[in-house]
Every structure is written in C-alpha cells, then in structure tokens.
Image 1 (spheres, helix red, strand yellow):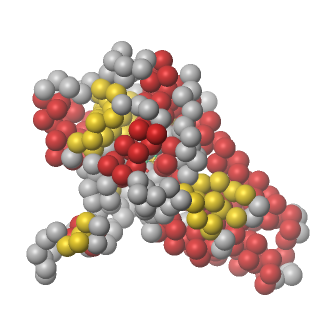
Image 2: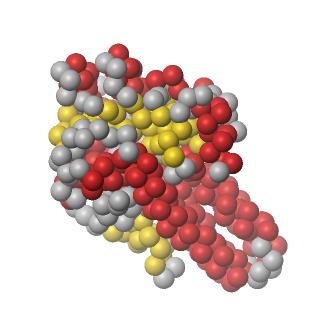
Image 3: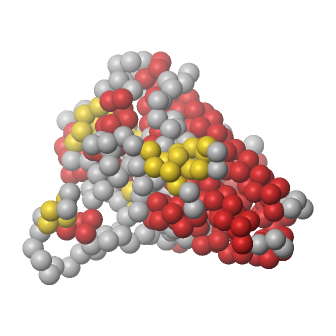
Length: 351
Ligand code: MRU
C-alpha cells in the first residue's frame, strides 16, 4: 500500500526542468527553472538536485535541454547528433559515484544514435524518455517500498542515513519508500535519522520530508547510532545506495559503512533499498566504484562559518562502500535480494 508523498523534486514542463532547490531546504521550499544543459550540469554538480535516482532523471532532462539548444545551431541531423552525443557524455560526468546518472544518460545517448527522426523528432523522443524515466522511478520506488514493508517489524524503529527519500528520487523514495509503505500499514513505525555530515541531508532533508508527511522522526548526530543500537532502540537499518557492484558491495553516503558495522555488532538487520538502475553489473566489487571527493569547505564550514583551525589538512570523500557481508538484503522493485548477491542480482535482471 502506498503512502503518497507530496514532494516532487524534479519534473518536466513545457521544455523546462522544474527543480526543487535542495540546498535551501528547510529554510525555503522553492523551485528553480533549469533552461539549458550547462545549467543542469551545474545543478547536479552543486547538488541543487541530489540523490542517485533524482540525478538520473536530471541528467536525462539535461540532455533534452542540450538538444533544444543544438536545434538552434544545426540543420544537419548528423552534425546535430555528433554534437549532442558529446554533450550527453559530458552530462554523465557531472557527478561520478551514482550510476543512475550514467544509466539515464546512456539511454538518451542510444536514442540519439539510433533515431531515424529529424531533429525535432529526436527532441520529442528524448523528452518522452526523460518523462518516462521520472514516472517509472516513482513506480519502482513504490514497489521497493511495498517489498521492504514486509520485513519491517510491527512498531519498528528504523534507522536511516542521508536522504534516500522522495527528494532523492522521482518522488516516493527508496529507504524512505520502505518507511512510507510500512507506515501506511502500521502507524506506530518511526524513524531515527542520522544528521549526515558534512552536507546534513539527514537533518535538512530527511526530517523535512518525513515531518511533511506526518511520519514520526527523531534526529540524531552521526556518532550516536551505536549508542541507540546498544540500548535496543533500533530494530533495523534501511539506507539507499548510489552504486551497487555485482557482488552486492554498496556505495552510499559517507558514514553508511560505520552504521553497517555497528548494526552487525548489535545483530540488527542492515538493508539497502535501491532500484535495479543503481546496480552496476559491469563492476565485480565495490573496490571499482569511483568515490567523489568534494570540497574542503563542506568540512571546514557550517552555514558559511569556519568551525576549525585554518591551514589544517582536510579530506572529504562523499561516499563509502559497505561490503556485501554486512548487508542482510537489497530491497529492489523485483523483490528482496539475499546473499549470494552475485547470484540473486543476476537473477533479478532476468525477471
Ligand atoms: O550526495 P548525495 O546527497 O547525492 O547522496 C545521496 C545518497 O547517498 C543517497 O543515500 C543515495 O543517492 C540514494 S537516494 C535514493
């Protein structure tokens, strides 16, 4: 059963991408118009839109925007296609870790390569694909939510890290999709949300969207999870993913790995919730997942204010990889995949 979210982080309307600016939530709830390809690239890079499935949708829309731009430069279809393929490849580099971005851009690239239409026809096909990717993601997330809800115990407290919610997807969420579907069946379910340093997606975004939907949420800082696990206050962990290797190793927001280790120690099931578009079967293990390195300022400053000494060393990886042995199950739109992941992942793609 679906518990609808009111949030739609990105949608396409009359040749423009309407994007909820996630850098200013919870202070403001404001949409910006993204009207050209470079603006979309920057919006993804600067995290105005973020979350693996949402940046996939954004990438697909960004290529439509480039196509509209290209139609003003070229009359020759072949020249238009060559220019646009370069732009599609560029768009897929706007962030390196979440594979949904490359997955969506690849689909647009295939349309450009294989279409037999004229320039306007190609634009229409790309536009249809971008809308399809968005709407399809909402459906996938609802299925993820419903499968996941089956393993949520009655009255459970679910810990999550970062934001894998409506804001991070087409509009229902993966980890928070599980929460939404579980809450629709049992309104005694509640969430503990890790703050998620340095960008505070948990504090700023997860609490915001759960509060908006009236789902009980308690905010904790990142270092507190094992304290509450030890007190028996956490029944399960559900997080999203940015890229899952063929063996189940899963990249997600930095700090996820620590939560998974703590969950294992306390015998608490740790689940990943993600659509198949997050699985990258071209890589065997998590060692091959590229980890985004972000700016020093994300660590040294909070709300523009320096919080540490000047001149010190800073390292700021945006993601970490949770080894498959720590994962109780990967909740997908095709059901819950269990170890051996090499086998269950391969089978899910056959369904
Ligand atoms: O850097 P972000 O905010 O894009 O990172 C997002 C996450 O790590 C999410 O957990 C992940 O993309 C899954 S979203 C359904």
